[in-house]
Structures are given as C-alpha cells and as structure tokens.
Length: 406
Image (cartoon, rainbow, N blue to C red; front, side):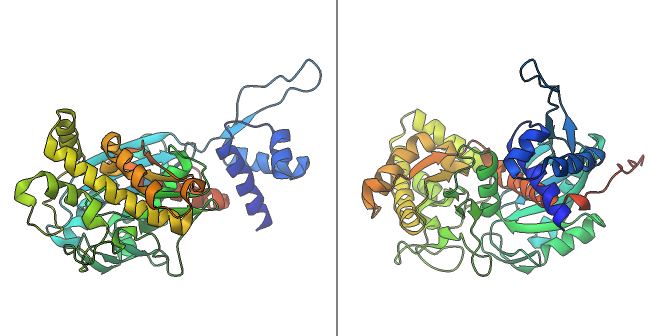
C-alpha cells in the first residue's frame, strides 16, 4: 500500500508538471532520492512515465534526465448522455485525445432501453477507435444529468430523462462485455466541474462552482480543491433551488425551480412566442444549435431576444449570489449555452450577483465562460477514470492485448 501510494504521488506530480528530473521529484514530494529512483524504475517498466531530452544544468555535474507522464497504451473513456445528445471523449494517460464525438439524440423517446443501446453502440465504436490508436481503455465513465448513487452506479432520479433507479453501470457493462474494464456513473455537473478544475479556464482554483447550461441546470462545487459530494453524494442540485414558488412547473415536479428561469428551455420560451405558454419542457433538439441561433439574433439586434437574455442573465446572477453566499467561491464557471451567450448574459449576471451577495466587494467572485464546449462532462468522466488509474497504478495491465481482426 505504501509503495502504491508513493507511485501515485510521483505520477500526480508529473501530471501537474510537464517534466521533472528525479531530483526535482524528490525535492517536491519529500521522498528520499533513492526511493524516487526505485519508483521511477518501476514506472518506466510499466510504461507510465518516459525520459525526455537530457537537461544540462550548468557546466559541472551529471546532466539531469527529465521525466514526463507517458501511458500512451492506457486509455480512459468518458461519455455523457443528456436530454438531446450523447458526447464521447477518449484519451490516454498522457492526455492525448484519441476520440471526441458528439451526436444529437432524443434520450427520452424510446425510454432508457433505447438510450442504453445507443450509449453502448457509441462506447463500442470509441473503444475500437482507441484500440486502433494503440490504447486499451482501462476504465469507462458515464455522465448523467440527475441524482446518482456513485458507489452502485445507479441513476436514482434523472427528472429531465424520466429515469428512476436505473442500474446504468451494471447494464452498460453487460451490454459491452467489457469484462475487467470498470464502468462508473456520476452526475454530469460534477464531472464537468472536474474537467474545469483540471484543464478549464479556472484550472487549479480551489474554490470553484461550475454550472451546466443545458435544458436543465446542474452544479459541481469544489471546496478547498476537492469535489463536494455531500452525505449521500447528491450535492450540487442547484437547478432546483426554489426561487419563484409561484412559477411554472419544473421537470422535477415542483414549481419555480431556478432551472425554470435560466435553463435553455426558459430562454426558448421567452424568445419563441409559440413556446410562451408551455411548461418547463422543451422540444428535443440540439442545445448548441439553439444557442447559436439565438446568438445570431442577438448579433442582428433582435429586441425580443436581447430582452429575454437580459432577464435570464439577471436570474442567473440571483442564483449565483445564493451560491456565493453559501460557498464563497472565487469563480463561477458557466458552460453549455451559458458560455455560448456569455457576451450578452454575463454582464447582467455579474451585476446582479454583486448587488445581492452579502459580503459585497469583499466577495471577489466572478462569472467566467467555459471554453470546453458542450463536451465538458464527457471530458470530466475520462478525467475521473485517469484519476482512479493514477491513484492505483499497479492495477494498470500490460502488455497491449491483440486487436480483433473481425
């Protein structure tokens, strides 16, 4: 256990630093140089690190041999299924992107069985593409917009999908026949927050909130550099903060939830007259296309769209002020359609947040737009797989299995 912990410590340091010598690693981690040398030898044998170009420091002494994270034979696959699309992100341990894809898909029509078949098909296609690139997936993560029992891989309640107590990990694993490749499931906002904290615009910020900008709205919260899960793993359901008790019915069955004010459905209702009298439900279509269409209207100066976006921005700031008062984050990163329309949304949101936050100017919280696009959650799912592999490097198998010629 101690050896595995130390192997993980070295790998994490190399993940966070582009290249480091053995001496650098020893100094940064506090491990003895001889211990680091032994650990590095094992990691080199496992092909999880590699030596890069020799670094000459001054004219005297032995040149340093910098090390970098390797693991190009080890894959991590992340998928996201949402109301109207499925996205895939596959990478190797070194961060090389092997497959990235997103398709429009009606996840409600046909029920969970139909959705699982499509999810399985896309996973199999991605696994084959990763194998052809020389990497065997060592784990698969799935992001879902809803409450997830992470330990059991069960979707407890996904209101916008209409799923209840779905054993997603077990069923997907059976469908794929992945054998010893573990399948995990987590909330989409949590996983997108992991991606933001790892490689996003505010990467490394210890106090961070991420907001999805989809038909529904979820949140992932980092406190002191750690993902906040809560007692049962259900924290972050910020879209269901009650902000207007007299408001319209939400997909969760309650009235006046925050997502009925700032979700994409709310904006579409405000910008499309034929949607004005509908509930919070939105006809299934690609959210990115909706956001792009609205952006074109804003650029053209469409008054109705401009007013609607300003209203949503103010509601976004109101909810953001609640989060700022509760968690005191340094940054609130917005993704999905929020990021697409950030130029028009965020000035209103920031002004409302600053007006309502209790700490006033002492609370230096700001809204920023994500640059990870609508695939942040699938990227985060892959990142979580990588985190588990780095935590348990001795579980990574080698050599590379033979590819099927079928």
